[in-house]
Image (cartoon, rainbow, N blue to C red; front, side, top):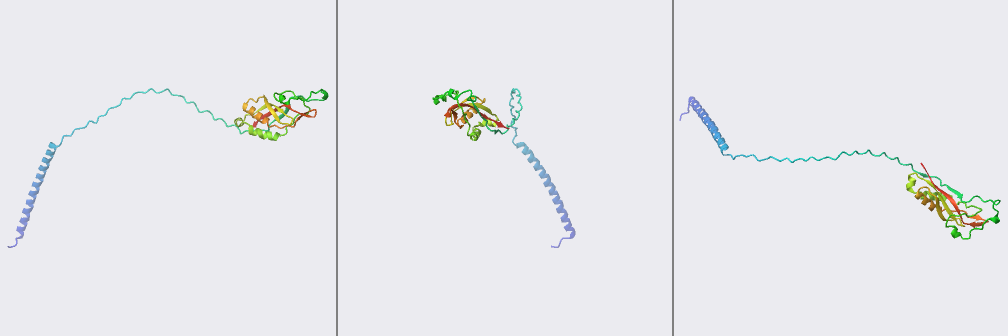
Length: 226
């Protein structure tokens, strides 16, 4: 077969392009029609949608009567801490209960004999004749003892006082009985003074060169300094 001429080849290509154009337009319009029908069918047969009830209720609020306002008082002022007390030297006054005896006014032959019943003499403070009064022998020991016996609560608060104590001293100079004559005003100090009184040690009292038991008045002082 003889080869096609150039004109025939050109005509063939022109006809093929026209056919492709015509077929493309047909496919385009057909696709549009099919898509339109599909969408109408979809809207027609799609299940009906309904809205759910999403409403909610509102709780009723009840008014509550508030209590009246309370005025809060301001905090109390800070209490200053008391100064640390220091026990001063204890005062142990040797104040005996009888006046000084002179032989001019009271001759020896006129003086009564020493009491014979010393046990009854120590029950209550009574007058006891003596020529030589007792002397305290352990004052330093008593000062240390008073420091230990000082009630801590009163000591920390800086409270002190003097207790007048009657002490009964036997013929050996030991205290056998003690009683509070004048209180310090604080029972704790009075009890501490009585406890310390039993630890006092004296030289024996003398009457006609004989050792005699006697009552004397003893001041015991608890004091502090700031």
